[in-house]
Length: 62
Image (cartoon, rainbow, N blue to C red; front, side, top):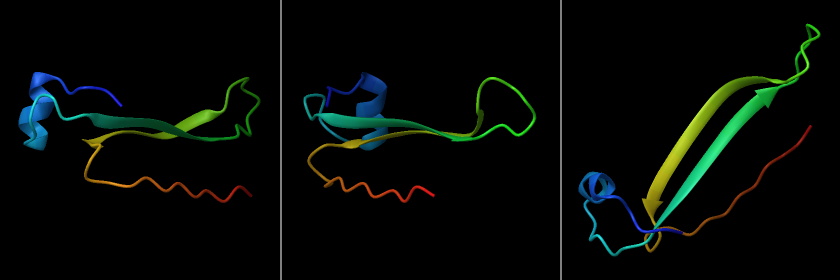
């Protein structure tokens, strides 16, 4: 958790002292063509007020 920037308080319509949670994630696929690194296929930055949500994270790995 952290305090929001001035721009974030306007976008989220929250007070400046309200904590926020920021989640940054990158989804990758294994490279089939011989490159050393996996290929990033999607990225997401999510920001929300910490007092409005409960986090639950479930991920199936196959």
